[in-house]
Amino acid sequence: MISLTLRFYGDLKELLLISHDGMPVHRRLPLPTSVKDLIEGCGVPHTEVDLVLVDREPASFSRLVEDGEYISIYPPFSTIELPSGQRLQQPLSGPARFLADVNLGKLAWYLRMAGFDTAYRNNAEDRELLEQMEEEKRILLTRDRKLLMHNAVEHGYLPRSDDPVEQLQEVFGRFHLLRETAPFTRCPHCNGRLRQVAKEDIIDRLEPLTKRHYQTFSQCPDCGQVYWSGSHLRRLDPRIRELLTTG
Ligand SMILES: [Zn+2]
Image (cartoon, rainbow, N blue to C red; front, side, top):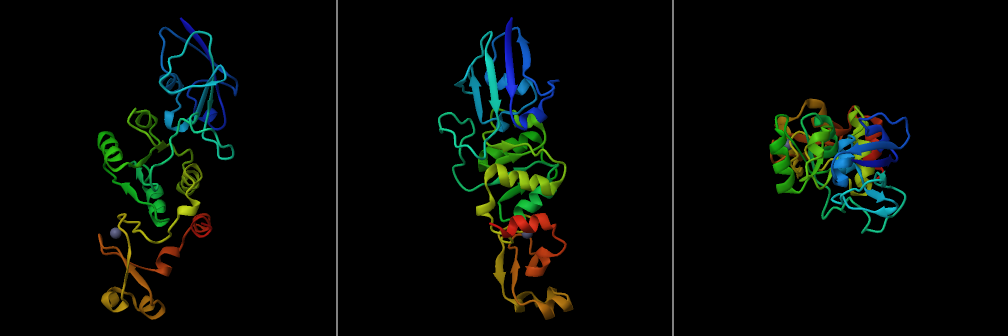
């Protein structure tokens, strides 16, 4: 039998599916297991963990644990820069692109509004999501822990809040999106890249008041939706407006 002590830090404590009272957790295992399986057995997907120390030494997810070890588990730090060799979350190799699961439609909408390439289908199965994530090198956003625990998931995030605006704030914080925003450049309906369109080309589609008050328009080449500056901003939650305008 292998006896271990685990200590989860930061908001990882809130993800634990075992009772802990904020204190270190004791686990007994019949067989050696990897750090990844050990942590995920407590309810925390590997995507949420950026540093693991085993008896104060940095460890990889694949390391096998041994009897008597003390394991400290940390979320990504926003204020401390870790040596890259110690970080378990690898930096993104290109611009942040997302794939939202079926329950995160509103978050997908907001990410597109902020200009981020975000794939979303409301009927995708887990297998299809994982395939698309790998093929298109997207960050998987889901509240399904089992899905995030797949080995194939290199970059992923489990939104903590039920509120889509707070989920957007979380994703911005986790992937440092503030400086990469390109508000109103992407179609929130279908993820198409908007392009400028001459007013006379779409004038027959405009309501009389829009026709009178707006001069600059863009259109989605994929679904044909027409946008003008007021159409995006109307009724927008002030918290989102702040994220979109402070980049
Ligand atoms: Zn569109």
